[in-house]
Image (cartoon, rainbow, N blue to C red; front, side, top):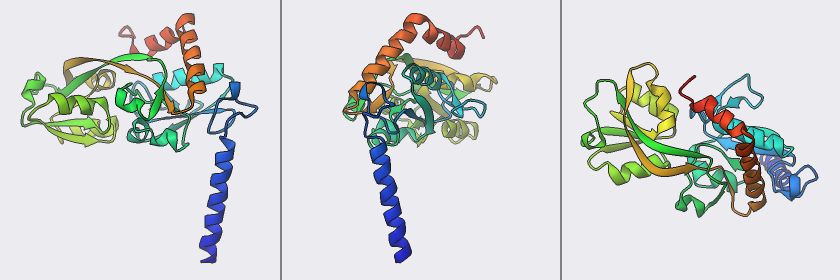
Length: 262
């Protein structure tokens, strides 16, 4: 009992120190922005989700990708250090990871939706995306109308899941935590198709064994997210994001990850 009590006190003290460290207004924070750790922009995303976030041991943060490089550049412009944490997507889109103080910003190809706005603040949109249907090459599935009686893999908490529930009548939907699990499932034949964001499905077609048979324009835009009340962080981030668009650095990153001429 004594050991447990001591451990509990130690844990409580650590939590208190963590809370104090992220109280905002620290000398290292620009314009009094509230950060989990003073002087550092802590970003959460779910990796791998190519080409937005991927593990890269050679990178300073241990990760790379479109989302990672944008947020890294913004952090640098804001005079902040940068930390990236691999976090379950569902805890990001629900607001749990941000509202609990795990991170300052969610960066995980997250679509801006009215439902998510109830729990999160979003930056300006930084990427226009579509949904897509991935199947094995030679599959008899050619459109979403061929999915009746078929098993379709979707990501938990994603807008792909919402689209599938609203548009795939007669299909059996099977949820997975993220792209890594979806990719393994279709390769193993556990699902007949995968419905998710187009840019994430594209890399799975490179070996010619899988193909995208349909794309769905839903008018979606991705945004970076922060907890409610952290308006100053969003305001500063939008300012730097706009500057990146104006100075060409955004286009340079876009071409790096999405250009078909590579």
